[in-house]
Length: 495
Ligand SMILES: Cc1cc2nc3c(=O)[nH]c(=O)nc-3n(C[C@H](O)[C@H](O)[C@H](O)COP(=O)(O)OP(=O)(O)OC[C@H]3O[C@@H](n4cnc5c(N)ncnc54)[C@H](O)[C@@H]3O)c2cc1C
Image 1 (cartoon, rainbow, N blue to C red):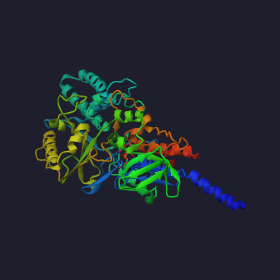
Image 2: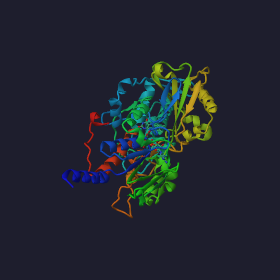
Image 3: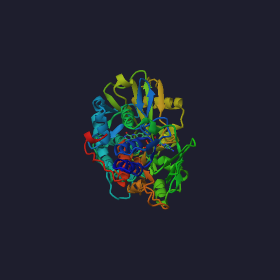
Image 4: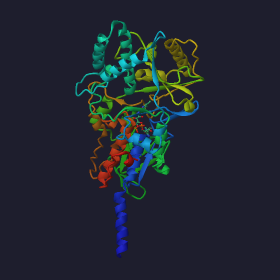
C-alpha cells in the first residue's frame, strides 16, 4: 500500500465508525429539529419516518374560506430573540407580515356589553394572579386562583362584584385553553417552576405552518419517508443486514418495512406514548419511564373555525369574550349540557383581506373531547344561539362553513399537549427524556433517544420546546461521536 491508499482505507473505516445509521420517528417540529441538526453536525445516514402524509405534526394547516389556517400551534410563546421560533420567523421574513392586535370586546350573557376598559383592568388583575410560579407547593392552580380571586371580588364595589367575578372566571377559562385542561383544580400550581419566560405571546395565525414547511426544506426529501407509521421499535438486539453488518435497533413499520439502525430518536407525542408504548417497544420501557408516561397529563384543545359571509363584529375587534354571571372562577368541568359555558373566547382572524370573515372558537379539555364527537351542523346551530344570546343580536346568521379540529381523535397525536397534574413535578420530564440503557451490548449505547414537547420541562407544550428537544438529542449523539456544534446564541445563528 502506498500512502494514498492507506489514507483511503483509513478514511473509509472512519466513515463507517463516524456515520452511524440514525432513524428519527416523527416529522413534527422535534423530529425535523433533530434531523436538521444531525445533518448540520455532519451525520449523513439519517432517515425520518412519519406516519402522516405531511410534515409538521401538531403544526398543521387546513383550508377554510379564502385561505389556509393553522389548526395546531398559532402563537409564539415568548416573542424575543431568545426564542428560536421567533428567530425562524425573522429569518424567513414573516415577522413583518404579522398584523397588529386589535381590541377586545366583552359581553354578558344577557347581551349587555361590559365597559372594555373596566373589563380589561379586572382581566389584567386576574392574569397577574394566575400567572403564578409556585415552587414545590404541591397544590393546585385552581385552589390558588380561587383564593386570590375571592380577595379581588371581595375588595370590589358591591355593584361591580358580579361582573368582576365573571371576568375573573373568564381569566380562568382562558388559562385552561393555554393548558388544554378541563379544570384548574387538576393542574399543578407548580406547573411553571422550571419554565423559561421568553416574553409576550405573538399571534402568528396562518404563518406557523409556513415556517415549519420552510424548515423542512433543510432536510433532503428522499430521506423523509411520509405515510410510514412505525409499529415496533426493537432495541437491545443484534440485527444483521444483507451485508452481515449488525445493528442494535430494528424499526418495523406498519407496511412491513424494516429499517435497521444504530440509533433511533422517538418524537411521538405523550398521547401516543400513553396509548401505544406498551406495544411499541420491545423490550418494553423501563418501569420509571412507564410511570412518568402515566403520571403526566395530555390535554386537548379544540379550535372551531367559523366562516361568515359578513362580519358581525366591528373592524378593529380581535377578540370577543363572553362572561357569565355567577360563574365559578376556577371552573369545574361542565356537564354535557353545559359545554357552551366553556366556549367563551372567539378570536378574529386578521387581516380580513387575507382570511375573509373567520372567527376561531376555543375549547379546552373534556369540552374539546366532547365537541370532537358532535356533528358540524349541531355544533354550528348551538354556537349560533350562543352568540346571538351574548351579543343580544337575534339576526346573526349561522356560519356559512364550520370546521373543528380533531386532535384527540387523531391516532398519531391523541390530544394537543402536555400539562402537569397536581402533585407531579416537572422534573419527571427529564426521566422521559433519558435515553434507554442497553444491557446486552453496552458498547452500543444511545440506541433509543426521546425528544418532543413532553420531554422538556422548561418549555413543554410549545413549538420552541419541541425544536430544542430535537436539537438536544442530536447534540447528545454528536457528543457520543466527538462532534461539536457552535452554540447558537442569537437569531443569526439559528437555522
Ligand atoms: C390545537 C393546538 C394548539 C397549539 N398551540 C400552540 C401555540 O400556540 N404555540 C406553541 O408554541 N405550541 C402550541 N401547540 C403545541 C405545539 O404544537 C406542540 O408542542 C409541538 O408542535 C409538538 O411537536 P413535537 O414534534 O414534539 O410532536 P408532534 O408534532 O406530535 O410530532 C410527532 C410526529 O410523530 C408522528 N407519529 C406519531 N406516531 C407515529 C408512528 N407510530 N410512526 C411514525 N410517526 C408517528 C406524528 O404524526 C407527528 O407528526 C399547540 C398544539 C395544538 C394541538
